[in-house]
Structure formats: structure tokens, C-alpha cells
Image 1 (cartoon, one colour):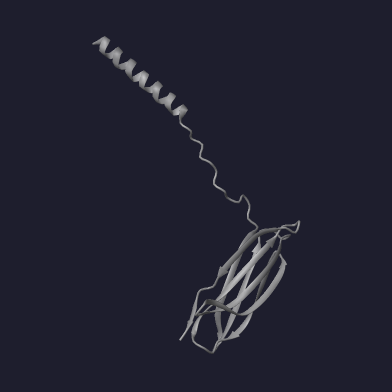
Image 2 (cartoon, rainbow, N blue to C red):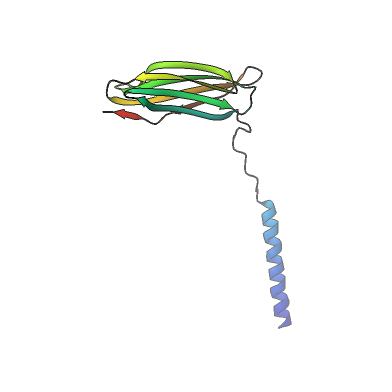
Length: 142
């Protein structure tokens, strides 16, 4: 019985050593995924909301994570047509820390409308750091 217990203990010990040796040979490092370590954009938005009657506010903008970043935004009022989204009017805005643009539009015809906002955020050295495009919800006029 002692020999059998000693034999089982040796088998168990050998098994544990083999597993730990095997584990040492397995590569556990996963290659890193390409992820930007730092983002310059704090927020971005695009809006399309009724202001009065058939008048609608078209708005869009972006904010940087740091005040020294220069931001340029383009806000487009769009209608869906036969060839996709057609831009009906464009506004521009720029500034440090945040920028916004937009205006008011009268919508007289039925269709599907939206606002598109495109932002460019520039680093302090003037190079382009990040871009972002966001869209408002669709507005359907019948």
C-alpha cells in the first residue's frame, strides 16, 4: 500500500511538473491591437429640430479634450434623393476648444432630411490630429 501511495504521489508530482513546464512554453502575450492612446475629441453632435411651424434648427459642433486644440467644423443640411444624400446648405465654424455652426431652414417639401457634421481637430503644431463625422436622426416630412 505504501508503494502504491508513493507511486501515485510520484505520478501526481510528475504531472504537475509537466503541466507547469508546458505552461511555461505557451505564449501568453497577445499582440496589441492598434488603438489610439490619446484622443483629441471630447464630444461631437449634429441636430435637426423644429423651431416653429416649418422652420427647423440645423446645428452641429465639436469640442476638444484640451483648450489649445483648433477645431474646424462643417455642418451640412441634407435631403435624401435619387442618388443618395444631397447637401442643400452648408455652414462653417472654427475655434479653439470648441466650434459649432448651423442655422435655420424652412422645409416646404416632403422627404427625409438630416444634419451631417464633420470636424477636424488640429494639434498644437498645426497637424491634423483627428477627424469625426456624426449625423442627426432622420426627419421625415410627409
